[in-house]
Length: 226
Image (cartoon, rainbow, N blue to C red; front, side):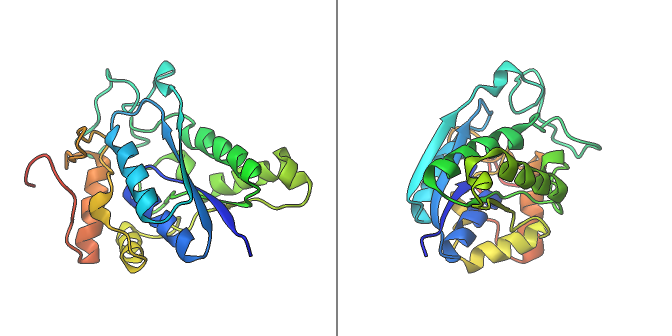
């Protein structure tokens, strides 16, 4: 069976794990990243490298300029990335980002005649973004099958979210089991051009706690020793 999948990859821990899981399930993977004006451009390098290492058949980078609307610390340099834990939806939330990304992934899936899209959203150890919740993904999947030629013709489109109910430690353990080299991933919201992590932002804190809880040595390269 010729199973194709579009896999959204950011170069970070979660999406790289999802790519490895999709490959293990026998999917021919076509990876998709976005240069949307984010602070951490090093994540795009990591996404390309991890896609190659994990056997993606094609890696595509779509350029978007979400800085034109701003509204996030990741796309507006006048908003600082928090280095302490905050309450509510953090300023690192990028308005409608997953909706935009999934929509483009959906279009590419139709072109490829792929019925599966994989995304590394998580609703346990995460930053509280509304577009990482299971009910959002389920709603998008319903929309996808209403709005596409494939869906109308009975080729059901699935939005796969294998990490949605896992802790960060469980994600890391799953990734190690399927051969992910986490030293090659970049999760930091404000990583340097060389991919060094700040060790202070929400993403860094969640990542470090995950490795600690999993009992696995953290391979992250930090700007300075933590």
